[in-house]
Length: 221
Ligand code: CA
Image: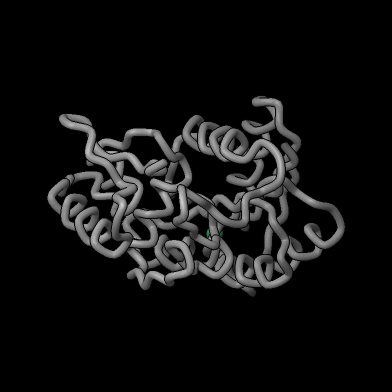
């Protein structure tokens, strides 16, 4: 994959670039947001590894401008550990995944691979399970013609499930993906949010409990 690395710490950017090169990708590194926008206007990238804290225009603004120009590169955000607001904002602005800093290089390479696998061809602009749709650009959720209003956290949870229909997620996994309670897994919270989502999505049910394992979303038909 052609990967653009946007990271102002030159040493970190170099490390990421060499790890991705070693893993068979074709990375290019820039050190600020303006340069990143210039690059993506010149040539398309499959994936952008985007640091949030940048001098000048920050990662959020870069992301916002990319999405406004309908540039469909996948975006992996590098966030500060524990900064929950950053993750929520990032995903709301259309990031595909995030990785809290500091991270192990292996973890970054694994996330990059996963993002590549998830969308083998054209980047997906909306997710669909049966008659439930989630527009990744506008975050509108519809069941059939009916619009469903979700809170940001409910939306994140639904997005995780809808990205991989049929895959069974454990409660812990969902906690990590949506809340990232690395030290205090609160699986009860997942149950509460799954309950709310089910209620809002309505019948026939799409989110199913897999006994002793977790949850999955799949079409009723
Ligand atoms: Ca930075």
